[in-house]
Amino acid sequence: CSSDLNSCQHSGPVAMASLVVMCVLLAMQGTDGTVSLHSNDAAFVMLNSATGSGQCWGDARFGGSCEEVDFSGVTQVVANPYVFVALREASGTAQCWGATSMLGDCSSYDFSGISQLHANSYSFVALDAARGVGFCWGSSQYGGNCEAVDFSGVTEIHANALAYVAVSPSKGTGQCWGYSGYGGDCSAIDFSGVTEIHASDYAFVAWNRAAGTGQCWGSASYGGDCSAMDFSGVSAIVGNGQAFLALDRAAGTGRCWGNSRYGGDCSAVDFGGNVTVFSNKHAFLALSTEKRSGQCWGAASFGGDCSSFDFGDISEVHSNDYAFLALDAARGTAFCWGQSLYGGDCSSVDFAGVSEIYSNSYAFVALSPGKGTGQCWGYASVGGDCSSLNFQGTTDVFSNANAFVALDKNAASGQCWGSALQGGSCPSPATVDFPRLLATTTSTSSILASSTTATSTESTSATMTQSSTGTETRTSSMTSTSATNTATTTVTVSSTATSTASDTLTRTSSSTESTTHSATVTSTLTTLTTTMTSTNTLTQARGRCRACGRLTERFPTVCGWNLCSGCSVCGNQGGNGGNGGNAGNAGNAGN
Image (cartoon, rainbow, N blue to C red; front, side, top):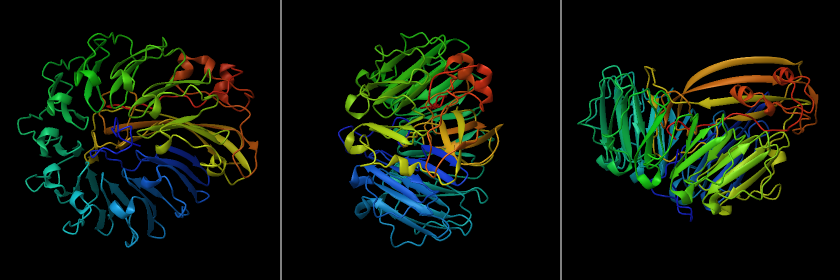
């Protein structure tokens, strides 16, 4: 999972600036464990922690082969563009695979007590916050040597592509290491009172919201010099890896700095009208639903010019590295702009019934669960062509920079497309044994449907929140339908939780302030449980509930069951019919 529009050349080599950190693309919570999907730009890893099984596919050089890895007891998987790390917290052990001989051999380290793993493009950091100890490995020039760092009191570690900063809020101190000119030297920064850290590819911003001050370090070309910026009144900081925006929503003003070609100059933009800001790797969009208008800046050919479009009824915005998509879900219309080769032209796509949009660095996917269809466009060889695939029953779609994975969790099956070398080929069971990886272990089964929409809002937390803007970390979807195991009568439970999310790529937002990598994520969980008989493996449900919040309001017909009893919401709809996948849209605010 690469970050919002992370760019890795489609021909194969990973861009130097590419930063990939821990990516949990799919979480299927069960009574006995979790199934999760992780990726970097070149490979995927699927883990079933309940059964202690895992499988990898993609480029073997960079993590696509893991036959030697023991996945039993694994609690975390973290990746950079070259290496994966699987941590077993209970036993204090870990295994690394991929290009370990160059950038990630961890076989000689003791992981006892380690609870946090962090990565930049060329190294890793392991932290035991409770004991105040940590260690690093990988390229010493780019953060793999942290012997001089005092980890006592450190609770947060932030990374850009080539450097790290470790912050101790209780002490009001921060320590940096890695490539000094690109963020590895913060000796001149006062961290007392700092509430948020934001990162671009090669720079950092330390923001004290309460005091209305900000300090920057690293490469000035990427936002490392903000000495001329006034941070008073700022309510949000948004970045795209090349530049930053400090937004004052109350005053309707914004100030930008960094690479002027890719968004560092926004002097001509009107930020009035309660704007929502989105970004890709090369440009920004300020969308005002009050004014029913949108303004873009940055590289015109990659999304920085949207002057010819009418944003009047837009409900969602999505992006990849080189293009944007604006969707009016109610009317079933959309328009795209940016680099046409990489998704900036969607004039041939029928958006009627489309409710889910996904992207990788160079392509988009639009799903119509009610129809059981999917449409792809962009660079064909890395995901822009899915014309031969059948999306009936698809519940989730995930991506790395160069490929996609679509899962039908109810049928315990999956299909891949895009660059075959980098994960776009996964014939089952020869390459990926989806039935085994999605297997469960109890005798009864229920379907847990969760719909999560991520939107970026102003952060009000008094603690440090991590942002990794532009550091090339991609998370495909925030929406999942999970298979779990329980023997119980039918119940309906709803709960809402709010948390600060970091390094996640939100692909849609509708009305709140959005930032690219520092976001407040609100998750609404609806559990619809019905008892059914199954074996020790995931059993195909006879019916699937498509009841998902706003979609049932806009598209009542997507609520379809073959056997509607046991699903209160679908039952109320009176729907009968389709076998659609999980509803909802996984958006990427600022992404």
